[in-house]
Amino acid sequence: MRKSLSRRELLRTGISIAVSASIPLPIFGAAPSITEKPLDEFGYDEVQVRGARQKSQLENVTTILMGLDEDSLMKPFRAMAGKPAPGESLGGWYEWKPDYNYHHDDAGLAPGSTFGQWTSALCRLYAGSKFGDAPGAAELQQRAMRLHALLRESIDPGFFAQTRFAGYTFDKLVCGLMDGHHLLNDPAAFPTLDAVTAAALPSLPGHAVDREFQWKSGSDLSWMWDETYTLPENLYLVSAMGAGANYRRMAESYLDDATYFEPLSRGVDVLADKHAYSYVNALCSCGQAYLTGGSEMHLRAARNGFEFLRQQSFATGGWGPDENLRKPGYDELYKSLTLSHNGFETPCGSYAHMKLTRYLLRATRDGMYGDSMERVMQNTVLGALPLQADGHSFYSQDYNVNGKRVYSVHRWPCCSGTLPQVVADYGINSYFRDSEGVWVNLYQASELRWNVGSSRCSLEQTHAYPEDGLVRLRISTSKPALFALRLRVPEWAGGQAALRLNGHPVTPSMVRGFATLQRVWHTGDVVELILPMALRLEQLPSPGGPPHPQTVALLWGPWVLFALRQPGETAALTFSQDELLQAKRSGPRDWTVSRAGADRKFVPFQEVGENSYSTYVTLV
Image 1 (tube, rainbow, N blue to C red):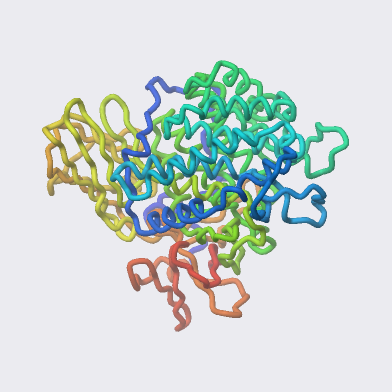
Image 2 (cartoon, rainbow, N blue to C red):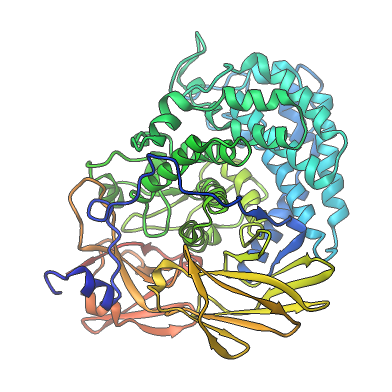
């Protein structure tokens, strides 16, 4: 290995060194220079995702959610309200245990807490199924509406008074009822929301309370794990949908400004030691405080929070080993590679991350947020193990030097609620629009349908990316249509991407990571984005701490390539720089690295199967 390389040499050889300590990231302490109107989202019924992995996940979560017994789903709400509660308990975190003791009990931690996430996912799955009139759409709609009706009959202040997670559960119920209103057009959704809110208010603090702060007298440690600081996001959204001005006031009262958002807006890093998923999810409330409430201070907080998060993110885009954000200067990411098997809370973390980057992309029109979203999707949640009918879920991604994909020991944990939601959102994360046209954010087999004036248009992605660097988009229009088509060009492409229109090279305008083609489009027009796919290395971040230039991940386009280990193998894997960068392609989704006459297979996370693996290897 060469002992030192200039940055120019590093770029020329394809080695990317993403080290926050040596490459300062922008901190937005002043008003952001954003004058454009935020981008709009497309509807769930306007996009269909067709990738094999995505479709498999969609079918999995739909089957599980449709198979859950309704009496079992309602049991904790009924029992905690002192009402008859027939049916079998679901068990796990979802069940109600009056004598729950956090010191030794697993089941009973958060009764009913995922109900709102599951009804939200049912609403989103129903809306997505309308794209092609998929069979089973009516059943999805009926189940979501029926569950919300049963909730209206069962909800009682006694439920919230007896749960440790009053704020957390209320937030998820608001989300489900919000989606029932705007995706199902359920006229009872907002009256039910009012009933749920009235039942919850006596058990809520009235303002944001940081995690691990004891505000309820006589409560044990487990009552300090609630997440009221995440509430504003969905409260802003329902207020904008017409639920009532009281929800806007409630959103503003729960903004975690004093200890979190206001310091972040000034560029002060207050992420250290915060609970990873919930405090990143809280940044989504900043996103809505800007998109719905117009607060530029909260937009600065969200942007700065994201930059601080990037400084401590693994190559996969994941963050928060052992569910904690890390303190700069203490080398905790490096230590976690040998001390922890809980590198990233995958379904929950990816759901929060993809919402946050969606909001920031809409607000700033900056492709860097799409790059980050793609990295997290491709390297984390698309490789999650399927949700099981008995409640076993894929919870944490393992970045240990001897990692493995395994199910959580917990049944029906929080990740059993976020996995269905993040899977249902793949489509709306893929495309955005403004008054001029369409922004293509995620490259995956999919189809978008929309109208330009009186012209019915569709855009279909037909390619194998990221197996290779060719992204192909085919346009269809009922009659010629004038609009702009903007394609995200990933930062890792290094300015070497090329664009073809109907087989001919074109030079588009480039703004903030998006290439723009504006013209009158006709049926049969084909746009091809050619991205320079090459192997590269990324160093483990070490924000404020000692650098680890010898600890690297191998990447191909947006994919991190994981080194598969042999059974019983425990030693750290070592390679030279040249051995890694000269890996041979041995299949569409696997590479072979040769060292001392022995071959080692590297694959994307989606392909690791039951093998042990290493995310990072050591350079020698």
